[in-house]
Length: 197
Image (cartoon, rainbow, N blue to C red; front, side, top):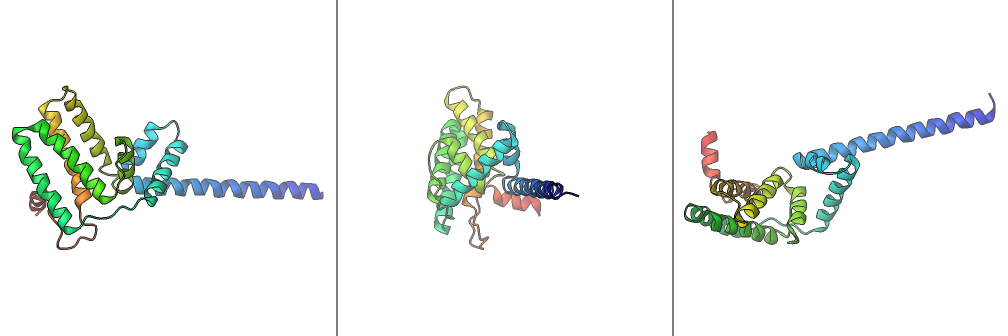
């Protein structure tokens, strides 16, 4: 066999190996992003023009998040915010719209204290999605219903759903990352735990 044929075979083999390695790397990246972002991964893929574009955007979110100094709340902060949430929930009975406005403001305060930048809503949601991918859709839903109610188009049921959505994110944001025994119970969590027993 001539030397040029061996060269062609070698180049072909190297190209095939490179293609296989590239494909394996892409699959591993997809698995990592799916594992990290959970349902947010599928949402990003559905919203993007291509899977590659969605994965690039999720990877960019992760890079941005790594540059942020996100910190857990102190026990005192968790307690203070939990008490404030109880007041917001109590307000809902007499003033649903006012309670949802306070809930939205409270969520933003918790996020700011944790170190999340308070840019526009979409950027906040993207930043939160890295650490809280399973509840970020609740944040979007709560915000959408809040905006609908603020424009006068919302119903009391919309406001109730907004509160429920905000509560899910609130619980994760104030949760003790170490699971210390000093963890502050957020309203409703005691009932949830009792119901599981």
